[in-house]
Amino acid sequence: DSGVTQTPKHLITATGQRVTLRCSPRSGDLSVYWYQQSLDQGLQFLIQYYNGEERAKGNILERFSAQQFPDLHSELNLSSLELGDSALYFCASSALAGANNEQFFGPGTRLTVL
Amino acid sequence: ILNVEQSPQSLHVQEGDSTNFTCSFPSSNFYALHWYRWETAKSPEALFVMTLNGDEKKKGRISATLNTKEGYSYLYIKGSQPEDSATYLCALPRLSATNKLIFGTGTLLAVQP
Image (cartoon, rainbow over all chains, first blue to last red):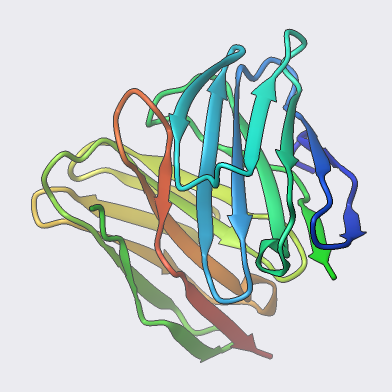
């Protein structure tokens, strides 16, 4: 158990809908990351937050947005869902934001868009 | 563009065999290299973060080395066990001030009992 929690574990929804994925980092970690793993792709970095501020952005679609709250939990919002958004979404956290910080991954949320 | 390449793509070994695989990356603008183990139906688990040329790290039967000048890292598993079966990923941060990791495609290791 990494100490990172994600809810829900599974989510099934329809095209055009909007969902929110939630992540609580390990106690004391200030940085949160979101990754997407689709069927034919490896882990793709979406976005990083550090202490409430956006720190780095990957190839995150405009239909997706995220934030980190004052209590350091984070939410990833996915809107106007398409079939291709079906994937495993991981959250990770690390103590600080820099390149040498070990990232601890949560169990993931499996999103299925029908 | 940061290309992180891992080889081989997959590996089948017998229990007790020692094995190793490679992560290759551009040697310029190196900040750190992360190794992860990802078992099926679980989430990636951090093994090592390596930052200095010549670094060697060890955790139990697993060890890793780093050569930043030539742009590669080796991961070694001594006396493989079935529980070592997993995908081993390496990842490098795009910039030093962030931890935006670019992952390789991984090496899938299957250890036959």
